[in-house]
Structure formats: C-alpha cells, structure tokens
Amino acid sequence: MQEEVLEVVKRKESKVRDRQLIIHNDDVNTFDFVIECLISICEHDLIQAEQCTLIIHHNGKCTVKTGAIEKLKPMCLSLLNKGLSAEIY
Image 1 (cartoon, rainbow, N blue to C red):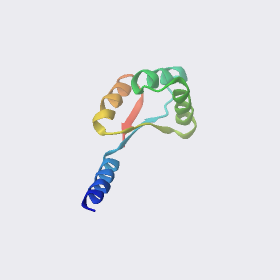
Image 2 (cartoon, rainbow, N blue to C red):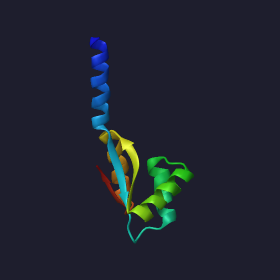
Image 3 (tube, rainbow, N blue to C red):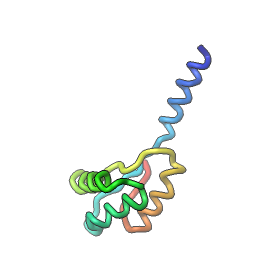
Image 4 (cartoon, helix red, strand yellow):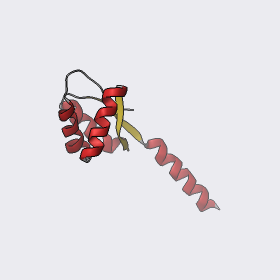
C-alpha cells in the first residue's frame, strides 16, 4: 500500500515539473525559417514542424515542446537567439 502511494506522489510531482515551450507568432520570420528552427532545435520531424508553424500562424502561439525546465531552457535560448519569440510557461 505504501509503495502505491509513493508511486502516485512521484507521478504527480513529475507532472507538476513539466513545462511548456511556447513560440509566439510574429511578422518577421518566415514559415520556412520557423520550420527549420523547429527541426534543428526542437528535434521535430517535417510534418510536426509544419503543423506547429501553422498553429502559431493561426492561433498566435503554439506549445512546441513539453518537459522539464532543464531540457526546455537550452531550446528556448536557441530559439530566442534565432530571433523567434519563445517562452517557457
């Protein structure tokens, strides 16, 4: 019983630590450039990168990656260095 409770607590803790890497739409970067960045920095395949880019364009933003802050921070910094509007939430 105690092991089950510990497992539930561990799962809840891991969910709390997950963050979202979000890219916001802008009027500067092209679709092709954003797709290229998603493939090279976020390790998306072509279809996933294209879909995220369309969502960014139509909805104003898109969560492009979820996970631990330690994993997302370098990706976010790389996207920012490329001139994209990115944040971790």
